[in-house]
Length: 245
Image (tube, rainbow, N blue to C red; front, side):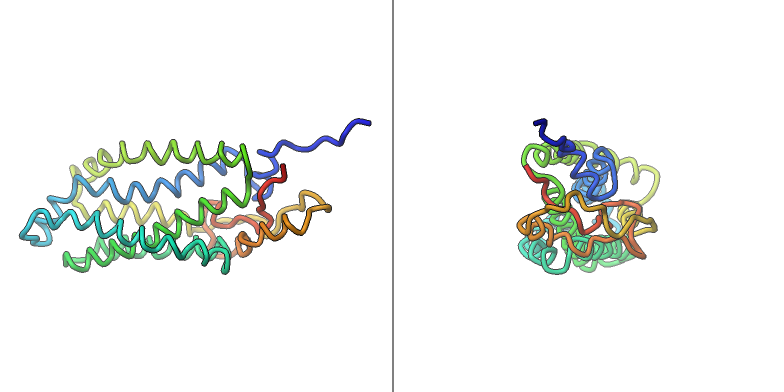
């Protein structure tokens, strides 16, 4: 007797969130790379920031990078549990909102101390985005396919630090350092713009086990709704679960 044909795991994972595999990888990669962009694009602008904000010790401008890492590092230990409790979508969109608002606030500040506070807040928002996007990958894929998705994402994440300083230098060549924060805020704002996606994906199988359902609970709250972004990952439907092997 011929066994029933099972769809490829790759197609199962991407179909759960109503988007193609390539689209999913690109979306996750962009959101993950935004964190690296927020770090390395600052490097060429540090002297200009110090001069503009009256920093007496040039070495103090390095805190613009260090404080971001501090916020990014210390908050990662809590966002995993929060996304399990309140849903990936809520934490992801909340992190994006914090990230964007802090970027615009940093662009408008005239105080070095306030800039450092905003950089710390940006690190908090960036950590929420980083943790939830990685959790979404684990929710939707498993085993070899999860490793494949993560390898593509890491390729982009490793390329961004190479090109980000050049992007920052290009911006301050034609504008002032405030525009780096403005442009980063605009990029983050794309993720919380308009867009539509079905609230619930089609069930992949009527025989899904309770164990699969339990593994999918972390993705609850990912349904598409008002205020959701053009980046479709922000509105992944709650049926995202690790693929059964």
